[in-house]
Length: 93
Length: 162
Image 1: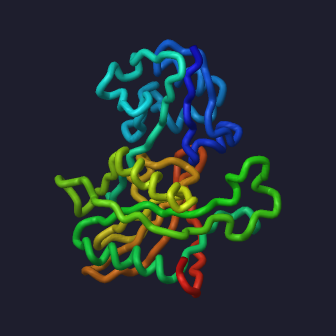
Image 2 (image 1 turned 180 degrees about the vertical axis):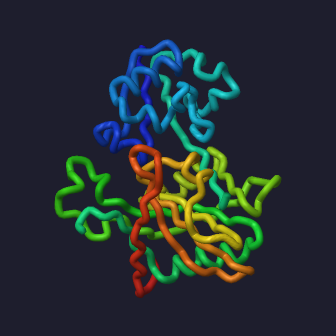
């Protein structure tokens, strides 16, 4: 069951400049795990040292935010597209 | 130093960022930087003869600061806003190459909070707005190890804006 993970521009330098990768995965978490195993340098930009998705990193299956589904346990099916989208935040202190 | 990161921006767009910072003062402003980055062309390594600077800002996509609780020292842009910015960029055959925000009454230097919420590759332009008047404008890129930002040169193009 290949699912396609779209790699956003800022992370492509850590993924051999690829804009997507396909994995056979049953859940979003599994797909992200395969992604960061294949491209290990991606990991720290997606996950904290404790292995949690960084708070500003949002993951969508097709057009659905996984926060409103089953988070990383969200099941995936053949042909699904996973998007990784940052929410941008900052401030002076 | 051929590989020192730098971006170019027209005087017109640089002025628009500064004006946005003045307009939202004392709150933080924010927006997307739309442009082109020659290092992203497939098969071209950064060591090869990339145009200098390799990153060109050709448009802006001003956004609404979604932080109602502390807009004077925080900004946030939702994933939906990011998608809108990316869509706007694609429609102009550009891409989102970074973000800008203001630091009201504070230097144009990234904070730890900025660092914790950043990705490498993006350019982060910060404009300091002192007492409502825009002052220094700087640009930064997060290092690969996420430990700190490195300054990025800003080359102002003095010709008609695109």
